[in-house]
Image (cartoon, rainbow, N blue to C red; front, side, top):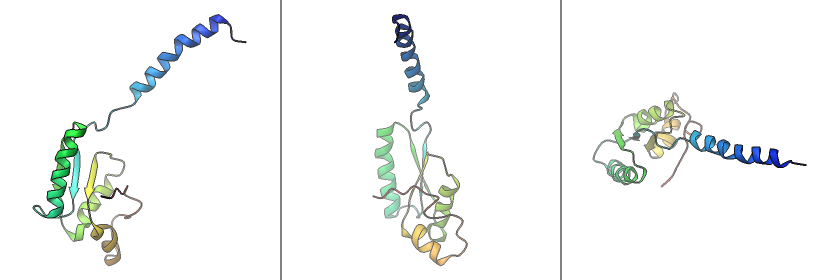
Length: 122
């Protein structure tokens, strides 16, 4: 049976445990977000990316920097994102070229199109 003294000790200690957990959660994002586009500037993907980046940036309170990394059918930009594995501050606008067609055409693709990415579709 729980004594009154032990109950009061436990009740007074409980808020300090929950406050420590709440402070341990860091807000996301903590720095500007890199948005990699696998296509040249002024194309449809670039315009859509810049429009979405501006809208998302106002919603999350952090700037989103759009970087165009065209080349090799989208493989160059995809490789940058794959090497940043674990960095939650980098996203990519892509197409089937870097994830479906490229790995079939090229034998030395420097990333795994399924394992190295968390896919989000529009």
